[in-house]
Length: 163
Image (cartoon, rainbow, N blue to C red; front, side, top):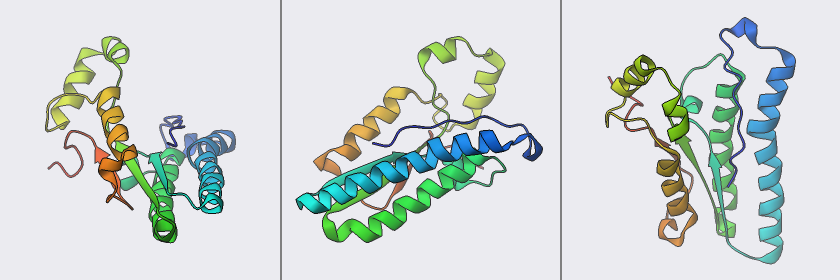
C-alpha cells in the first residue's frame, strides 16, 4: 500500500515554488513509483502474484493548478498503465481516491461553519473518516477483491459529480 502523501495547499498558481513542487512530486509520485517498481520486479522474479494499492485523491480526477493535483493524476495514470502491463503476471494494481477525510481529532478542532459547509456538499451528509478508507484498503488488499484490477475507486460520500 502506497500511502505517502503531502499537499502544501498553495493558494494560487504563483504561490508554487520549486522546492514545494519537488517535495510533492517526490512524496506523492516518485516514492510510490520506485517502491512499486521494486515490488513488482521481486514478485516477477519469485513467480508470485501481487497486489499493489495506491492512495490517490479525488483531486487527481479534477482540474487543478497545484502540484498535489498533478501528482495524484499521475498516480491514477500509473495505476492504469501498471495494471495493464502486469496483469499477465497476476499482479493487480488499484487506487483509492479519498475525498474529504478527517480524523475525529481534526474534526474537533475545525470551525463549525466550515464543517457544515463541507458536509452539505456530501450526499451522505457526513465527513469521511480514516476508518472508512481503512475498510476499503482492507477489502482491496484481500482475496475478496481478486477480480478488481485497474480501478481508481473514489471514496467521498458521493461528492464527485454531485450537481
